[in-house]
Length: 262
Image (tube, rainbow, N blue to C red; front, side, top):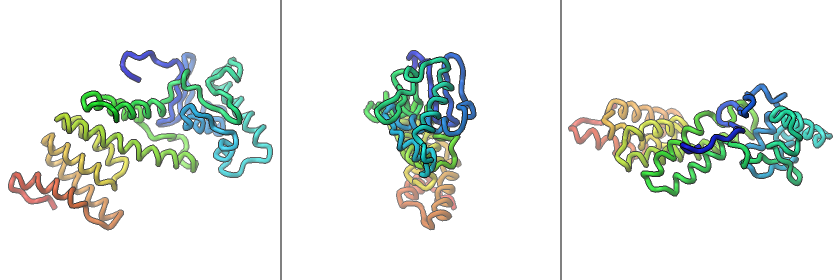
């Protein structure tokens, strides 16, 4: 949320462990009257305000094997979820809206952290570097936690995490490169390091991290980053770092008449 914006009275967070915050109370992972009601909320949240069909919910919630009377059972879970979210509010008036054949989250009334990340990152990508950097940093703060951490084993959650990690990696690299373009290497280090944490085998992140560390005068850290990158590539892929990675780092040491660290 931008500075000065009015806070939403109703918040759904799916980064980290699923949490709902309302003016009256906070619901955490175990407060949704069961695993399946919570998963229904998470699946609807992944729709980002778009309708999610009941058949798709049943397929995911029951891992491809919904019971014979799944429509009735699903509707009973949704009723439980609505009562947990907004006690005393009639079902059709809750933030969990009924659509033709499905449900959606009323994002006009709810702050959804996943949707906020998407919106801020989109604005950052279209902005000038000076305006983009704080937006990229804001997006990374919003996504400060593993997506759907409450669902470590569900296939649909794993798929969503993998897809989001690729987007998050791109945002972290963009934040770091934007900071470097603005001559702010210290602000580039943290997002670049986050990119290497997200995908240790993506060399672009390591290249940006090494550039940032060298520009910030952190030569020992840059040497460590290069060694870590090389060790991971050798161990997991059986390859050496890209020539660009070696040239970037070797060139920085050659300027001082030193050889590339072993």
